[in-house]
Length: 198
Length: 198
Image (tube, rainbow over all chains, first blue to last red; front, side):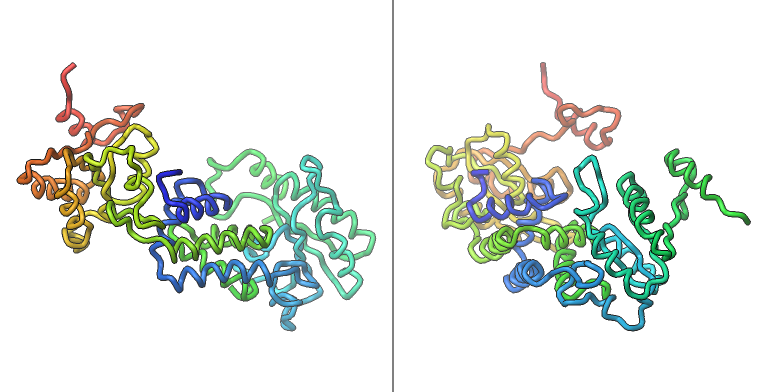
């Protein structure tokens, strides 16, 4: 990139290392940043280094947070006896956006994947099992509907069942508003298997 | 976003203000940044503030650079008598990638657009006219093939013609490898008008 000066090509190179940002987007972002008000660039940069430096795992649910306990675990109005297990903080945020789940979460930070060499000890399962020693009535497994997510769900349910705590799995099927014509066969079969009486 | 702690939601908010980065991408980027090695995050942040603080306009061609003259204007092996006029630094980089243009550039930072209220004084035209007082043999207008780009090209060519300096416009037509079937009519007509003898 000798056609850009040093400061610019360095910025482009740094930006293009971020996920989903190719060479073209990195260029566009770089020039946008160069044209932003100085103070706004400093705010953006500070929010990055600040988040990186201060964010850690919630002592209870293991999500990423800047306090000892995340906003949900420290909220007394949540039902702490119902735990929804998710793969990552973004999945947790997705369920929070529905505004209908009143329990708490447990973030695994991954899923079991023999293919990728990720075993039960590589995700935050031990921490989940420890939480079950307090008063828990139900564990809802909301890992993804992928091979890894299903494997993880099976593994966790087998681990929890002996404790007598109720274990459930979120439903899998045709998305609301989905047109059957465009839905893959595995999902269609899953929806058929999971049919409910009307 | 009360489901994310402060540091995280602030980072997501800052990132989502960048062009082409929606709420979902901002979330993905934020968690990626939080998981990056600390030193790498600091490098990314520093490259942003550094570029913003040090980058200015090249004294000659008006592109963005961190020196008084950009790498191209300060290169004695370039042909400084041939000036290619482009709308922005990314267009300049696009032509540089071809590796075949040996002249220099002039970056307008925009195009004339009566619709958007951008007139000839709002782009770096005055600086181009000043450059023509030194030894220039040809000005190649490489503004975009849009309404604004064409308007700008016409305006510049009328401005330069009286000086006797050669003015040319890059060709417009069917892109190489393009399938006629999928090309818009305006481009097809343009390609017909611009046909060359074989």
